[in-house]
Image (cartoon, rainbow, N blue to C red):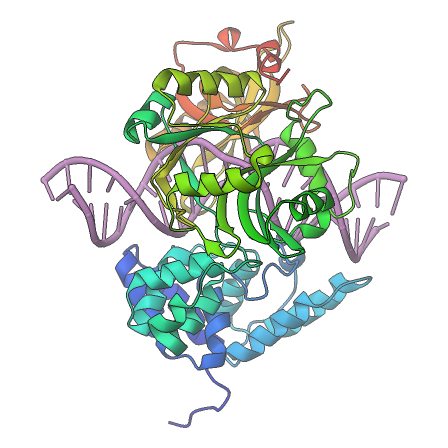
Length: 510
DNA sequence: TTCCGACAGTGGGGTCGCAAT
DNA sequence: ATTGCGACCCCACTATCGGAA
């Protein structure tokens, strides 16, 4: 058969995604992805690895549902778009900015859609909006890259965690095998994927599980930062490895003044009040624009050191990494205790809360820095609050929740006897059985409905767990819940027994 | 055989920049 | 000047697969 010189067709990638989505078996998904990767020419590896793990090589390109939904197009009958053509179009769309940009983007996308089949357009819509839903993202793709290159998974995973870039990792795996993968080292100036924490039931649980051989540190309600210093150059990155150096000059200046020549720190940053207490998260966040609110200074709190003066510390135990941090930046180290007894740990937790912080982290002193992993070596402990709230309505779910009433509207009781006052929504904590129950039960309490929501009479009371309350312009009471999740329904209670808006307000930080 | 780590999915509140209105 | 969209901060939780114990 005659083979076009222009490489793999986009339709083959779409077919692979369809196969991946058609099975729940992770092994079968890996097999389908592996097969697709082995068909690629070198230049196609980066875009295809990105697409089949739900991303674009170019990153987010400013296209969402509202931009894309109503672009008219008659589907093509026969696939013709190639991988390289599509990659070029994405690059072109990403490069458009300035006045008239929306129209020019729509023009390019309309041309593209006119050349794609219905299946291809469906895949593109999901890919461009970041909502692929094929049951495989970076984790499954990591396994598939290893399988396609006939390599063990571990070096592929490590190269990805250290480079932060899966497409580049795939290229290295295919071109240079294990040698090329192990050449990805911690490089000062290039961020690694941050180590993450698991939730703990209680401080005692976490302390006991790690055998008391722990560092117990304040957990702050700010933004994660990874700070790289190489000589005079300082670069700062967020949790998702986005560079924010230009937005945080006070942090850059502070790090440039530390007594070292090169270093990589992991930490948290937040804004403080005049009396040194943490400001609400919302106010810290207002500093992450380019030129905003410069009068609100950010403070760094470092809790790890991954490199110091030419020495990589990623694989060193936490205790050594904390020693390094103590040597170079003791005044910016997060408040923490090394190997406290259980009473000391409990006191540190109380102190953290009294100072207005979220809770504590409990970390194994012997564990290495497991970049990109969410393991038991780091555990977070936060106090829980609960409220009994009235269900005011529920929204129809998406994806696997299609056809179920899912996202709850929650109200607090008006102590003056008026209608309940909405304070937030939640979809968390719901089991499949509870989703089914809601879908069966809620219509019996229906007051009205629209396309998205069934509104209820205020009959049902649900116990909600939450991390806290914040001021809000979204809801009529001026309050909103943080991280609300369903614990259980309270059939023993009526709306008259629900918590009042005053009880919700009492959870605001003082 | 059971347990558990890792993953993907389903969305929450809030802030910014930017372009359109 | 205001509004709407998209990106990105923070995040909890359940279901599932498949390897570990």
